[in-house]
Image (cartoon, rainbow, N blue to C red):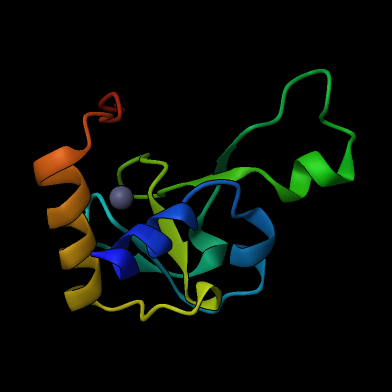
Length: 104
Ligand SMILES: [Zn+2]
């Protein structure tokens, strides 16, 4: 469980990490995609949008489901279906309460 906990920390403020990754995965919908597919980020406001450190601390939103539950392979954990399924089970089916609003 510690491994999953450590990995989950990388799903927030992960902009710079994901920029350095070649593969990303979502712990909510268990999809695997390229960093280039991510178009949505959270964390910037009108007050800090020009602040480089704020930009590097944005949180990726999953291009498939909109969740802030994206991991990049640069975090050191394997981005594969099995690992994402374990993350999903640990965080979304049991303990996580935050669910994204359905888009479209
Ligand atoms: Zn997703």
